[in-house]
Each structure stands twice: as C-alpha cells, then as structure tokens.
Image 1 (cartoon, protein in one colour):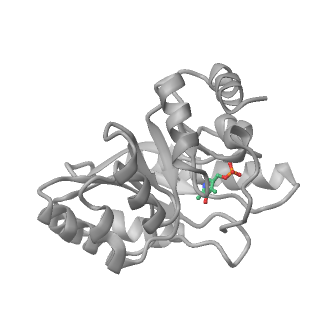
Image 2: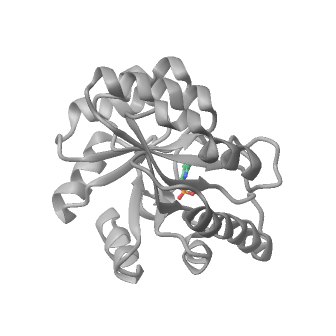
Length: 227
Ligand SMILES: *Cc1c(COP(=O)(O)O)cnc(C)c1O
C-alpha cells in the first residue's frame, strides 16, 4: 500500500475527535509534502530539533509542527518561533526556558507535560506526583507565555496489551482528576491527552486518548531506530 492509502485507511478508522499527528521523523521532505499535498494533512511530529528545523524551513508554512521527543533546554530557542505543540515537557526548568523563548517571540507556546507511565527506566517524564506539584504551584503564574494543554505518555514497549492498557488508563485517570481538582487559569487548560502510537493507538483511544502519534503505520518502517 502507498503512503496515501495507509494514511486514508487510518484516518477513516479514527473517531472524529482524535487528532492524528503523523510522525515523520527520519522520513524525507518529499514524503511529507506528498502526504500534505494529497490529503491536506497539517499535523506532523518530529523528535529531533535539528531535523524539525530543517523540515520547517523546506516545507509549507501552514504545517503544524509537533515536537514529540526529548527536548534539551539549550535547543528551545530554535523551535520557539514556530512550534505548534511541545509534547515532551519533563521538567520545570524546561518549562521556564520555553516560557522565556516564547516571550522573546511574543507568543504563547502550547505544551504537554510528559508523564512517566512505563515500567522501563529509559523513558523520560514526570511522575504523577511531580506533575501534580507543578500544576498546583503558584510559580506557574510566572509562566505567562506557555499554556499547559494536557499530558503525553508512552506505554511500556511490551506485547502485553493488558499492561499497556493499564498504563494508559492510569494517565487518563490522572487527566480526569487534574481537570476536576486543579485550578484552571489562562496557562493551564487541560484538554489534550496524547497517547498511542502505531502498535497501540487502538488501546489508547479506548483508554481516552484524543491525540495519537503515528509514524510507521503511515510512512512504513524507519530505516534506523531513533529511540
Ligand atoms: C517515533 C515516535 C512515535 C511514533 O512511533 P511509531 O511506532 O512509528 O508509530 C510516537 N511518539 C514518539 C514520542 C516517538 O518518538
């Protein structure tokens, strides 16, 4: 099947409320442009700043770029002018830097807090406790150039789908709890739950996802593993 067929088949199967982020990391400008031109798709995800900036430069400016991989504070300045959503905020220091660079660009950058739900030790993210502490802290008021839109999580890399389901459900419960109990203000508007990739997006949707990040199912296998 072609790239366009893969995309159309996936898109057709998704409920209306699900935002599909097409994860284009390692794939060429040409493929992204082909998909964008054929379908009008706008949301693309990358996990490396350098690759993201290169693609931003080359491709139509109405594309909405999502940064989904680990972000180092010293690289925020490169994406601050244009990034659509940063999924991978895993420390207050990073949040602070995003706020600072957003202010310089005179914009508000939407972000998600990346929450650690997997049992593996290699995944980045905040614990539920750390996220709660941050969301309840009065320090957030200082960050008027960011908006926390919700949470991102990655399940364990396992064949055990019951485990995946329980990890996703734990994040959905936290999302619901946070929406009920945490103060809402201009820079905290929790409406996005970014969970689900090629192999587990169905379970993620059953578990309450409203944003999925799908790469290989659309573009085919990547020629090298980046994570
Ligand atoms: C690569 C990546 C994806 C997409 O993975 P696929 O298995 O190709 O769908 C989703 N989220 C993150 C954070 C990634 O790095």
